[in-house]
Image (cartoon, rainbow, N blue to C red; front, side):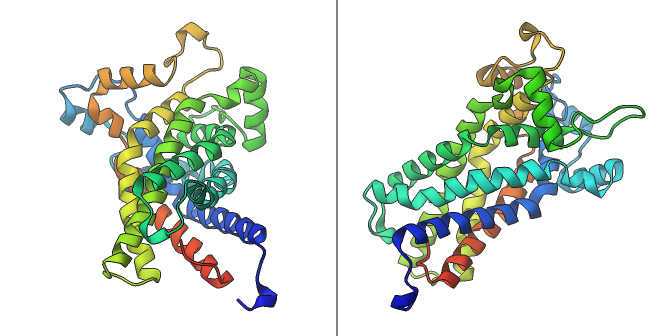
Length: 317
């Protein structure tokens, strides 16, 4: 940039936050159909006794894989069914991802990372986990509503939807479950955000600079896509079990159910019941759609993030 166009450090940082939010919101819109399918697969056959009968459990699924699952949802609920929960999903990304992606580099610098090409991996992990925790606490209500709207399948004749829209969901949950009800599932949400951001952003950062340092690829779109593909797979691998738990805790029926009769008392209870009923595989239900969502989501997010930075004259990640 020319001197007269040079931005102050504060304005540059704020623009990077804006770029992070815009990139991730776009990615969320594109991948929402996959996200809906993932949520349905995660709760399909919930707590049905499946240990030792993987073939039977596989055959009893209603959503039989990512592609057939998407076709089933479109057939049962129309194309709009694939975009259930879109409003809270976009609001979540506009706040959560703006903070977690935008805060990663400032936190990394606070940890003493001055050379992007040779920053120790542990500093990247710590910066990513911290940024994810900060961002997630603020968006639990939008994440809760997104999960509940996406989990609702085809309605029978005379059945009304759980929520008529985003604001009705806010009012209904506040009325029936109290203010704290909007923060149901906070623990697994924060845990997932720490795992996701501590994996996704550092893996992208580290893969990118490893490829640069060994001169495998040079700075540019191809490098960004390859690094994002690596990060997308790693984050799906590490986050899937806690994502299943978060989905189930948030989606469980609360209205009209006594506290002592809740399906899950918390994160650990959900983990143990899922493991006992469905085995280890139950914790990886929906892994393929989770990977197929996080892969493209990561690629789109970082591709656009790097593009916006380049257009503004900022250094790459």
